Length: 426
Image 1 (cartoon, rainbow, N blue to C red):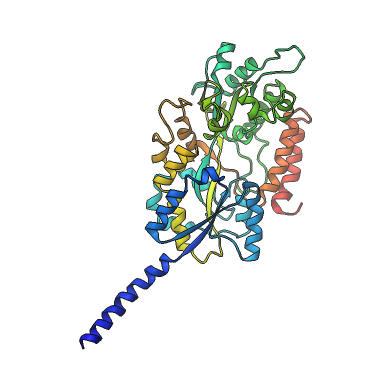
Image 2 (cartoon, rainbow, N blue to C red):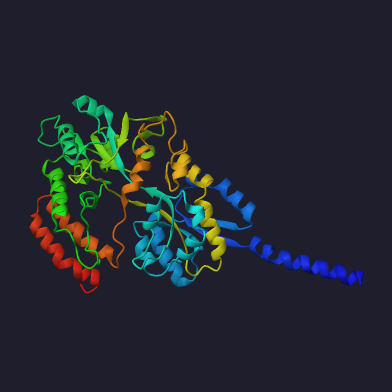
């Protein structure tokens, strides 16, 4: 009887341990686009995650430019990872193909854990059907960087929270200079490189599509006024584009900004580490700060929301382990590292308001503006075939902006071509 009792106890203990052991042996694959020097910051955190959960993470680097196609091929071939980084530049397109798991139920189940996450961040990662195909990891939301040295030299007051579109345009005109007299600017007041014209429409109370998502909605007083202002930026020749940057010996406008030849550049919180800092000299190349985008005639602001998300593949056999890892990437410690060491915009307000993201005595002095900007960030419409429709809209707006057609012509073309594109009948 004693021996039998002992065997029963052993069997009972083993039965309790089996699920734990099985979970401890789980291995998930994670695809990311972190270069080795950036991924090094993740390694100690990954080691801690594995130790605490027993879940082994096999991290694999896939270049940003290659990840989309590799994901599509891997899903077709049955060799996809469990978790993958996703870019807002192409996430919707892949998500609409059903490649990613709908996280709605998991997010709802664990919503108490996500209270510090910016609510606007979730909207970026939804399909046209409302499926939550990815969880936010970092945000790319622009604010208005400005070169204080150029403002001082031109005798212009720095941007304030009360700045309007007209104030920004006047400053851009004053900052644009032809110093050698060849009839072409050598210094520009502005660049639209990281700027989205759609934000002007949103800020002015307009929308890109009708509420049913089937037709364009740009032929309204609000949208027309926004597009007319966008045209003024080009009509006054105050914005540096690729052609002008190359003419001045730079590969693109951000490089010309870094050379001190552009007065204002909307960009994300990551920009200082790339476009304001000299890694060899270990110092900033200019005196700069950041401000809110200016107010529209309606007294509102808007910015475009982009970023990086984390998706679980629909065919993953390790969903709970993968989800646990995705949540780990959203935890305070990982988000703190991301904000402090990688210069990324944390998805958590409780991290974004700490020294991890707002280090004292480190420019820009007004970096807290990014936390406020997140409250009025917009994602593009979540409708099927939006990418096809936007390609048409953007092309027509661009032709209008540079003076190759009238606004009425642009809007007529948009109203003719966009509905078939949205319906998939073009």
